[in-house]
Length: 497
Image (tube, rainbow, N blue to C red):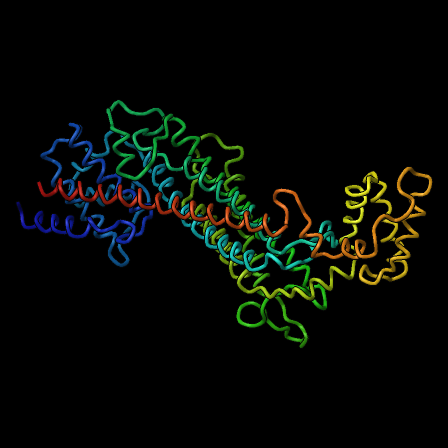
């Protein structure tokens, strides 16, 4: 064994057995190196590459990889720029490895591998943000706040229940990531340009070495269709995450139009900033930046769809690795901002209750009780409650101080001439209890409602889903890292022989 080859073997055994995820950036250059290492092993063992050529070819490959791993080293992302470096290091014989391969299937493979890693990054940040959301919900099971529809205060709700609604949206995003990952986690290697090759390449072994769960079955699909689908689907997921984030931020932003918000950001740091001219203002900078990140994510997420529109199959327009990675990075930044917002919230339960009691957000409870307990048709009970609200607003009376006698009068006038009981069937205590926002929440009986028992159930189930997602991420990462470690070990053993 030559001194050079002995040194290379020591490097291979001592360094390349290290975890690939830690040792090197998993960019296009990295994956080209891994594909080439796997091709050398598989083809030499299966008779497609003369074993006598393997040492020189392998040593030259490691020379290119080692040079690329140096500071400012050349790390080409294209096969046609990687191969000349390999030829310079080992001669034209290195191209024997390229039999049955093409830049089409090699680039499709590294794009999928990089997108796979980015989806796991996104899933991890989504889990972190969703965990913060669930933890906050657990702290506010008994915090009663107004919720809004059409921009108007509608009903009281548990703040925990409100947060769990947003968490449900993020959980669907997590499902989309897992589903998309299964479609991305497929190896295109061995499909060549679009219809395979006459070389009997072992595609499954290649997929196993690169940590892919399966193959792209159809050779035409591999680089002509699926590789265009992947960035479009990832852009859709990023857009969904951004929309969920933006919905939450904008709902919170409406409080800043009030002189006395019941929820806002803790002042100072990167959360808020003062106006340059108006001393009283505390602008919600964190909300602004998070909303801006969400908008940027949506703008980037639409890119692959527009680029794929009206082009023939397989064109390169939507396939740029840097651009598609930027979509995921923007979504990660958006989720990180969402997490910061959640950690910066200051919630004022007393002020929230004051706002609830300043309007008639519990009036539907009167209609419900009249129907449920006293047999009035819902629309008739709704009409009674609506007349009470109309009178109260005309007189400037809130629900807390509304005279019980007026409720009796309005009821009697509204049901006159009907088969309903002619006297108001609610006692004054029952009437007051019906208008209490706390009672409204406690009396909810439907599955998925805001009553404490249901909220606690949903929190528990949400935590279980987060734990499952955490394990899923760990399993996927471990599978890839183990596969690459096995590849490096087998490549080192090949050199040592």
